[in-house]
Image (cartoon, rainbow, N blue to C red; front, side, top):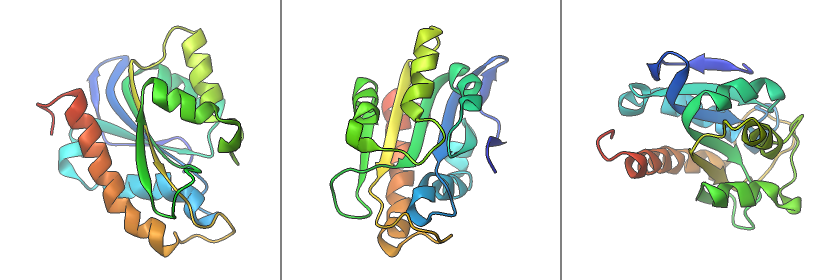
Length: 173
């Protein structure tokens, strides 16, 4: 499913208003939470009307064009938050950049999201509005199902996407 887009959130040709990017490996349990959350989000009509959903899989530089053409980017991914499994936290703008640059953040992805965002920054096309919705994983061992705590967190991820979009534009949701 890497790079698969759902919905049509284009405001005008060449620029997409809102992209929700789900990251992770669905074969490593909770690492796939971003991709699993996309499945819930695309079923939410209030979000599906305004956003494009992109399954970013395990990240690669192929996502650079998607990120560069976004006015607003929301990323959902498993993140080591030093919390309990299923914790959901939102990081916006510079806070997102800081959390992604932590050395202990680690990544099982081909390239890190931070590297892709740095490339967009160097090209002068970093989305002005960006947020990371991080979910503390319980397990990233082999398996296709989310752990109980992370599965239970997915509705909170959906609520966090709503909250971010509301903050960016009260008229949207």
